Length: 333
Image 1 (cartoon, rainbow, N blue to C red):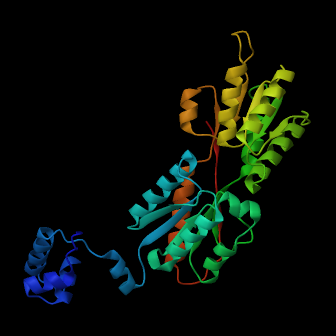
Image 2: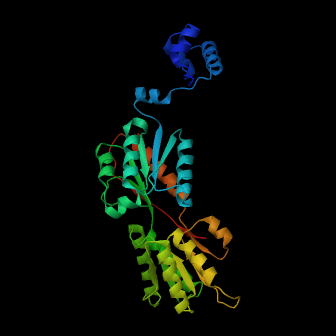
Image 3: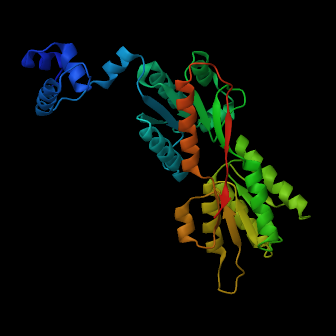
């Protein structure tokens, strides 16, 4: 049988004090003498009393809790965003609850409904793959229409009125490609991507193409996009086997970089094979395993911290303010 938690009413009866006096003693109210506060707290400790924060939140009208919904937690990018959000909220005495959409609208909608049902004061979300690809945002617009504070990050939609945190995907790829050409001396770079259907994936691809054109390099047959890892591998192997002059590969997302590393290692049959410079959006763990890898660092923890800052500002500001889109700077590592 589950043991029931000690209640304020039970402590009130045992100590022969009013419920109000017990509650105020636990919260350190100046209305209650120090001796009474000490007596109540010692008794609460003896009983292993744990405050019912949810009940307290209902009375106060706020929870001091923020909800976070992400597509998955296995991607190191989302894990770092989560860390940035939690660290900032912890500094401001807010708690965080997290839900994983598994890239589906159904799970995402269910999580948002639960969180918005009085459990959180605001929500931070990176929308699921299904939400973006089907352009289905009714479940998110329902939140904003009822006044729920909302912050989008990474995958965003211009049609949703809320605060947003992004990076300049176009500029990040343009600058990196330009760096590979001018500073690394590369002349035959190809691009790989598994996110061509996403808005930020398209921006990154345009940045690559623009940098190639700026440096008078051809882009024909230099763009490899696919919907699956298997298709990407097949296209990349074929391209590398048919063109031995390729000296650089730019992966537009982490999985594309990982597959590029695997394919190039498989095709390197002898020490005389020329090295191919690999760059892209990936995590520090991959960089540690491949020291020559050039990383586009998205500063995910900074993205998380800024998202947390925006959501708290929106919650605490009672007057309507224009929505903001904050852009976090990237850097090459």
